[in-house]
Length: 238
Image 1 (tube, one colour):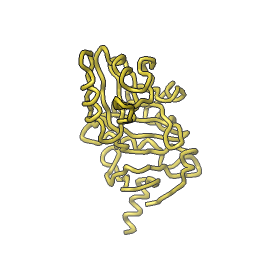
Image 2 (cartoon, helix red, strand yellow):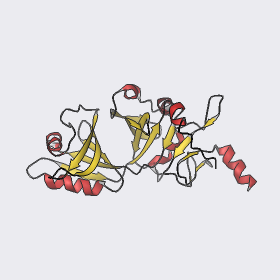
Image 3 (cartoon, helix red, strand yellow):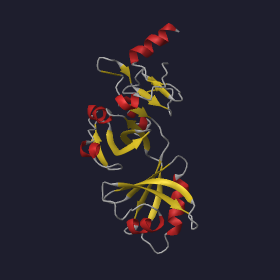
Image 4 (tube, one colour):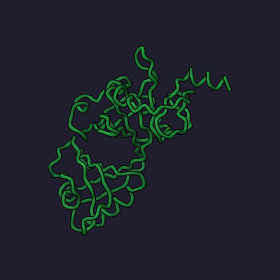
């Protein structure tokens, strides 16, 4: 499999970071905004629906327990934390709520990936997931849209020095949610035929409709995805 350390691709194309491992906590209850605003560092109450804010949960002595991104929605607040933290953070938040109408629950049925680079919005549009105004909105603006593959949550972010999007969706039909995300970046773009890249978190599993022969291989660092034809040619040469 072709390997590359060309981080410049983040400045020219669309790069997929599949299976980031981030986890979701959903906060509900009539007091959710006020309650969270009193125990985390972010300005939750001042964040409009469709917006988000950086935040951190602190100990009473001011030590950071965890960083988080908070996304305000119509009927709840999504809190995204790093891998392995959702259950612990949800429990900690719930313990602070004594007389408040508030609940926090980890959601294991969501998987998150990132699509980064100047071509990210165009790649989303090609699968019927045009981010629309979110593409030029402030960081952490987000929306939920329907695509041919099901509901897709999109948030505008800046990561690895590049603008792009976080993508979230529940698993469907027994397929990991990120399996169709890796199809978003083009295998080749324009006449230069630059390979689309995948960053970490890769699996050696078939992806795409009907068990496509195109595969993501286990990797570290930046690696190029092979097209189905290139993968077949490589397999035939072995």
